Length: 449
Image 1 (cartoon, rainbow, N blue to C red):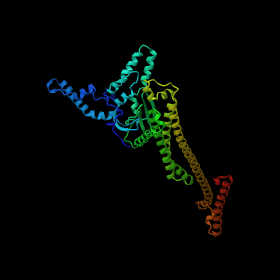
Image 2 (image 1 turned 60 degrees about the vertical axis):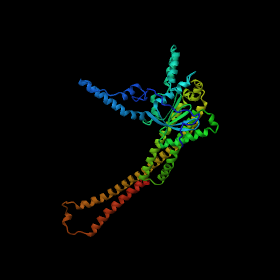
Image 3 (image 1 turned 30 degrees about the vertical axis):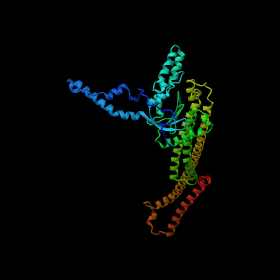
Image 4 (image 1 turned 135 degrees about the vertical axis):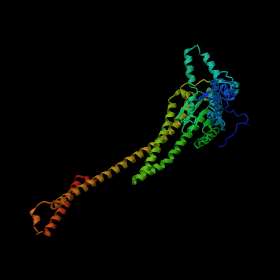
């Protein structure tokens, strides 16, 4: 994917500027021109030797140490305050940028009303603050208008929304509609969609680079067909949804054959290794189902909000001076969301079928193991019955071995015949008892398991 520079291209839209906005992010100033921060980094350390009082000397040393610490942390803070991203414009060009949170907030909070000064925006003026002050002043005498204005201001992009695009945070799947910007966090894609550009974050990730190529191809192809007449925000959103669906489809196609092959092998022979492989694949399938469910929930939540879908026409908001469409007029957005929701639902149905087949196979394996366990129990019962029969024969032999004062022991006319008769009688009794027990167990059905 080629990354071009914006310098030297006639008619190209300027990129996001580094606006000097003193905005607090995570307790540190994001503007390099902030007065307090500039003073702390450039102020000369005072001569503590000129002060003769010990407490003042200690305070002076602490101030010098604090200033030195801030000076060392300033490059590190600037690194953490900037976010690397890929910027896609309406013409299918892409540029690698490093923007600050203040610049993103300033661009997202610009209000286009009436005769807003475009030159002020180009000069870095806070058009958002001026326009909002004008709106609040015009509505100050009406209570209902003030309530609407407060609600309107709450819908602007806030600092907490950076959790969805900042790599330092674990983002949850979301598709939020803010004034002038769409916040997208689905699968590997973390992006901000404006009326004329798309910012794709974490460009160093391989999955994001694959998504960037797909988005670039989609935006360039849209110029050659009828989709070029669609607003840029819809084309960008559709490209992101395509990346999400392709990612889910590829992941499902990767482990689906492995799971089907493991299920087929289990139906023929059950081993400990196969059961362990099935367990690992089942865990992978469960994690995939959670991902698909999160994407479905994000799309359904947006489809349930008619007002949010009406505010997704960012190009129209900019052209009409921030006038939103009626709540019910959002057919284009609804068609796009419903189309890709059906694609995600189809992927979910395939995963559910595999999950159901896995559950059925587990039930069959459980039944087979139960049958084998019952057979072992029957074998144990049969062995116990045979041992009981031989134990009775052993009791007879033990009777003759006992130290009892019997008259027969005093006689010396022992007979081999009687020895053989008694021995075979005992063995025959044991065998007959075992045989009768097994026949009885077979008659009642125990040996048929």
